[in-house]
Image (cartoon, rainbow, N blue to C red; front, side, top):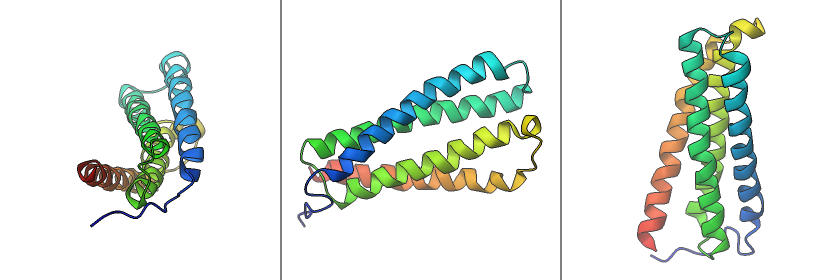
Amino acid sequence: MAEKNHYPKDKGCARWIGPVGAAFGFLTVALGAVGAHLLRSQLSPPRMEQWQTAVQYQALHALSLLLVASLQYAGKSGPLLFWAGRLYVAGILCFCGSLYLLSTRELLGLSLSWLQHVTPLGGLLWLVAWALMVVKLCRN
């Protein structure tokens, strides 16, 4: 079954997915530097490990967003890429965002233990996004 090319026809999705991916890439480097230079002495080793995990997964999924945008610019747009891009963004916000906050909760003086339930949701969103990418790439 051929995929309809209307999600968006004019590459409108790539207009924001690419810049968002690049912005997440920029933030990855900035947050990695914050962890390495400002937080390393203030966070316990397990909390620092959480921070680093967030940075690593954010880097990978920032690149994934750039892949989605590249495919869209190449004329491969469709509902699978449309949703994969959105799920990558949501996964970064849920998974990485929750880990950044959880790792610094003592420094921030906040009780954020409920966020530990948001982290796996981000991982699940990424799994769906990757599955959509598998289907999209196998169809082409």
